Every structure is written in structure tokens, then in C-alpha cells.
Amino acid sequence: MARLALILVFLLALPLASPARADDISATARSVVRVVTVAIDGEEVVGFGHGSGFAVAANRIVTNAHVVALAAEHPENVAIGVVPSEGSKSYGARLVAFDPARDLALLELNEGRLPPAALYMGPLEEGGQVVALGYPGNVDLATARSAEDYITPQAPTRSQGNYSNERMVDGIHSLLHTASIARGNSGGPLLDSCGRILGVNTFITRGEEGDAPFGFAIANRELAVFLQAARQRFQAVSGACVSMAERLSAEQAREDQARTRAEAGEQAAREQARQAALAHARAANEDARENRLAVAIVLGLLGLVAFGGAGLMAYKDRMRPAAILAGGGTLLVLGAVLAFLSRPARDDLDVAAAELPEQKKIAAVEPTGRSVCRLVENRSRVTVSSTADVELDWQAGGCMNGRTQYARAGDVWRRVLVPSGEATVSILEYRPAAGEYVVTRYLMSAEAMAEARRLRAGINIKACSADQEEVAILGDRQDTIRSSLPELPNERLVYRCSRE
Image (cartoon, rainbow, N blue to C red):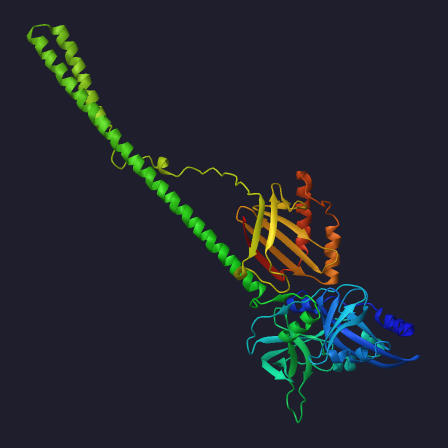
């Protein structure tokens, strides 16, 4: 058995190929493995087989039972190896669950971790696009030059087809599809276009006299029963498959509509204020006209009184007082004429006074304390992550849950997470005034994660900090990491938060 282990270690200790592309299928491809079995009789290797599999947990692999049947029958003489699609080493594994009726098996890695894939448990649309991932033997036969080529880590082969319908095969729910699979694909996943597991590829029809072959995959309903019986937890999603471009476009349209409504509301408020100011200006104008007319009438009456007094003084031959009264009367009449003529016209309004004054911006008060955030499904795109509620405890200055410091970016508080043990970069954004929490995730290759971790090394804040300079540096370093990420993320989870 020791010699068997040494042979397996030698075969698996090989460098890995270049990372896969950063799309949904490539993200799931990093969960796909080649499953290798090596049989030894004494000092001689008497059997070598391989198939495919995929991770449902960081250390657990699903494959077909027939791929590891020899290991189940002869555990002392057959070793199991798991060859990841990327990384720096491969691993030995042991069998932990075996169901020959469903043709399913569960393996546990002796060491190492893999990014787990998610099972899609929602309805399937007949004719929908599907993708098969795995390690078909006919490709190996065409490209392999030695036995070592069969266990050299490399990205799985992908093939595309359409889902036909669900069939019962020997009492097992199976998915009939047209994606090309061959021997060696056994145990590998059948995916939808969002990279979610639909089933486990198991066998194909025989093509005779030019007949096109079809593939069969064990349906997730059977896989879920198998995993539950093995007490193996797994991630399940059921939302419709929507592309990230479509989701972001819809979100942008929603934001544009909200901005348009806000601008329309602001314009209506300004027009209302303008009309109120104009009404006030008209009232003031009318008051000014009436006041000037009243002054003109009073001055005119006083002038007439003065002329009457001047005539009386002249009748009494008192010429000096008569002249004074006549001069005063003349001045009063002239004043009356000027007051009348200087009245503002009805359309002579102070337009500047009708303009809405510049509104002062009042800094929004951010609510603090605990809240529960629930996923908004029609604004989110989920491929592998949990959709459970998220509990948050927000404190002023960007402290989340008493341990994680966020950096301000306009009206948003942001933190970029680059974990050491996962193949995911997450951008966490919190908008306390709007009550929204947004998680954007990038499912990254090993090479891309290494670069992100290199950039993360410049972030020294490990906990909440009141040092504004440190927080500003955090924001700058996070912007550097964000600029290195792919154009589109794989997931975007939008939560609406409320006090509980």
C-alpha cells in the first residue's frame, strides 16, 4: 500500500496549466477535477482508470460510482487521486459515500481545498443551453503521449448542447441532452449557462449507422437525496439564469429612472416655488401701485387745499401768504403727478426675486446600529452564494460589525475582501442612508487571486480605525485592487436592510 501511495504521489505532483477564463463556466470549471484510480497487485500496477468529478464542498468531491467502483471493492489495493484543474498540487482522496443504484459517489480530499460549485434546483426549460465539463478519454487519446499526460492537471474540456427533457432510466431521474460527452466525462457536471450544476454526466447512447449520440446526466433531485443521505451540505440556488450584463443594464435603467423621477420632482418643486415667488411679486407690485396712487391722491388734495388757501389770501389782499400757498400747492400737485406717473406697471415684476434660492445641502445623518438585510431577487444575480438574510451592525465612521473598517466612496461605504483560502474577491458596499447592502463577487483563477493578494498586501488596517488618514489609504488601495478585476463580476447580491 505504501508503494501504491508513492506511485500516486509521483503521478500527481505535476505543475498545473494556465488559468481558465473569467466567465461563469470557467468559474465552475475550477471546481471540476479529474478522478484517478490506480490498482496495484504486489509490486505491479495492474489497473489505471479515470473519470471526472466536481466539488460540492471545499474538501468533498462528487463523481460516478462506477468511476471508483474498484476502490469500493478493493480499498486496500486501489488508491484514489484527485487532480484539480489549477493550483500547485494534487491530492489523494478516500471514499466516504457510495450509491451504485444512483451511480453516485462522494470523495473526501486528504488535504487541500477547492472552490465548491452550486446545484441549481429550479425548473429546467426544454431546449435551453447546457454545457458539459470533464475529461473525455477520446481527447486524452488524441493528445496524450505518455501515462503522465493523463494525470497532468489542466482545465476540463467543455462542450455545448441543449437540454431535451427529463427521462426515467432504471428508476433514476436523468436529464437527456445533446452536449458531447465521452468515456472520461463520467462524474463530471452538466451546467446551465450561468455555470450552475444541473446534473452529473453518466452515460451516452450508442451511435449506430450514423445515429447521433445523446448524453444522460443524473438529475440534481437524485444528487440532492444522495448528499443528504451522506449528511453532506451543499449550496443550492433556484433563481432564473440572467446574464450579468442584463442584470447590470436593468439596474442602470432603474437608477436612471430614479434619477429622472428625482430630477422631475426637483423641477416641479422649483416651478412651484417660482410660481409662489411670482404670486408674491405680483401682490407686492399691486401694493406698490395702490400706495403710489394713494400718495398721488393725498398730494393732489393737499395741493387743491393749498390753491384754495392762496385764493382766499389773495381775496383778502394778503399777497405774500397767497404766493407761499400757491407755490406749495404747485409743488404738491407736481408731487401728486410724479407719484402717479411713477407707479410700477402691472407686468413690471422683479424676476430675480421669483427665482428659487439655492438650496443648502444638509449632511445626511447615517443611521447606526443593528439591521437585518434581505435579498432583493429581481435586482440580484446569484450563481453559487447563499441567499440567507445578513445581519449588520453599522457604526459611524465606517465600522461594520465591530471588526471590519470600510472606506467612504461618495455616498457609499466600501470594503474589498481578498480571502486567503478562497478563490473569490468580494466588494462589499453599504449605503446606510438608503438602507442597501450590495455584495459583488468575482470568481477568480489561481493566478488572478495571487495578483489580488499581492495588491492586498498593502492594506494594513485589520480592524476598525478612527484614523482618517489610514481609512483614506485603505480606499486608495482598494481602488487599486478593483482596477485589476475583470470587467464583469460573476455575482451581484442586492439586499434591502431594515431595523428589526
